[in-house]
Image 1 (cartoon, rainbow, N blue to C red):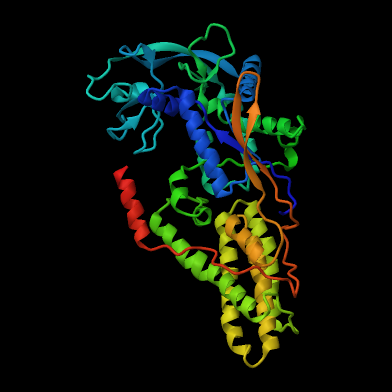
Image 2 (image 1 turned 180 degrees about the vertical axis):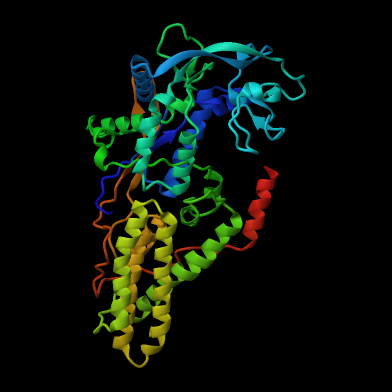
Length: 501
């Protein structure tokens, strides 16, 4: 909307121990597990209006080949080395256990249900061999505990200390990163980096491209992040421009990368519209510290901000205009200082909100936009066109025209957060076409298998990140409410459901 070239790609992590644990528990294959989850993600992103240029996954021929190429290049340049490490081995199952297959007592805080790689209670990264009284998750209910012993196994390690200086220099100019992310990375670098294993004793994952390592795979923490690169390559090939990915990955001067973490939202979408969740997550996105989602805050934001401040403003102005001015945008008279001030403020918001979005300060961007909606509400209350229309129809027409211009601007300013309601409002304001583009699931055929991915085609419209050009006389669509009010009981009901899970 702002004229920037943006490539938004991501995908499902197909490998890793959570997938294999679920497969073992359900008696199905790991591929069955991830394909089921991937299909749910594709459905969720479509319903939420998350406009990925491509949302793929990491069990594609393309990703396997690129990940193995990364491995071979790092090995050739001596950034990988072999080392033996001690790992827990389950004699009952005759296999080495990945970290996530192990649970037990944290050696630091003594939390009884620490994972083999991390304690969720104290947050410390752990070595599985340090766990007190480790238990194998493969043990069936009622079975005696499995016998775990410590054995040595050989793996490839990434020489992270070799990159430490470059990473410190890379971090210096990342002023657009969130402060809590920058602080987290600095703490890691200050403590000194250590070599980290990038392979594991697994049979589900990308095979190590070296002879003699059957039964071992490239570890998900290493290959999953390569997925942003491989997805860019896949996107470019699908467009018929196989070298297009290089504009984002080899011309670094004007390129910024962002990483997004997905949350499970399929259950939410069965009961609620997408915009209220998008609004809450954007307004509460952690910028300086972690934040939590609560149903109480979800209800409050929807009722007190989306409806009371924004939705009611748009609906009452459109409804009154539609009924009293021949279902059209009124022709204004001469604007007074208050009229010009509000229009000017709404037009200036494109720069300030755009700047906040460029700096990934979503909370700030929403705050500016919400404040503008409050100003518009005050303007309408002060000018009261439902009263002035009885004595001065021309002044009422001017007031409503100014309000509609500002509402049209707010529609665009809110669009990054509220695409569905903004699209509805776009039609109510009398515009043709849609703000939203087309999200569809596409099948990608490869030589040995096919996979499904989500692709996006932008809408065919002239809407830009620019002030309203709403024309007097433009025919309006029939007004309707943009949002549904939630009963406050919802918060307790949803909280109770969580307690049963």
